[in-house]
Image (cartoon, rainbow, N blue to C red):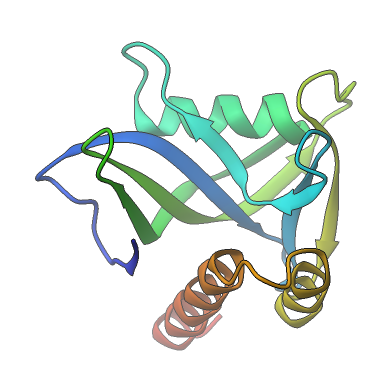
Length: 151
């Protein structure tokens, strides 16, 4: 089940991390998954003993060749009953894109505003509201963050 959060959960292991990178103009970055044929947030599972930050940085490089700023704001969690773990979504400022070959499961990225992202995802996945819910939670957190920090 998807939940809005403002801090990391401490009662269960965090096994997955995803990111919604935010560009300077407020646009977001999503990745195209060639296997699923869908737009997705960028992320995946933690490997071995890596930290949340290391996993996010690795996933961003592996999936879209991107670096992000040092501040990562958790905004959503999904509890997986089958593994008794969480996946956490973070907002982070996009830093830069590096040359990248797209040899893994993602074949590219799209930069657009929240509303366009939701419209496209709704067309691609008309019966899957979860990705829209994730973007709505991200948008709400961006609005809260912008108001608090006068960005």
